[in-house]
Length: 76
Image (cartoon, rainbow, N blue to C red; front, side, top):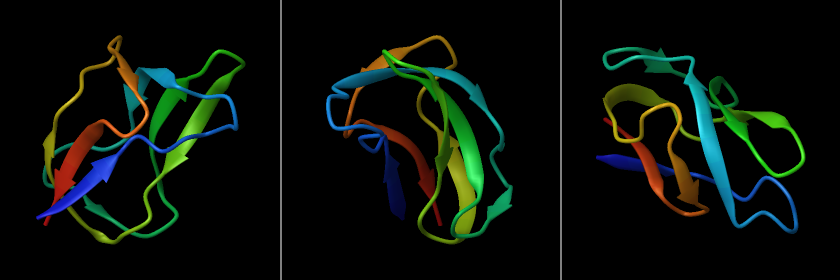
């Protein structure tokens, strides 16, 4: 199982708010694919995944504010 965590999207980013998922459980993803949009204190930013796999579970719902490093989804 691969754990996909919220990366730091800027030097001063401590947390972000998930605005939307661009994938669903069962979707195959490839490295560099945009899988979510996160709002930081400065802008809405596309979040890319860094490993290929299949989305197993989305752990965070749109509208939730979470700290950097929180697991957003699992892949297999």
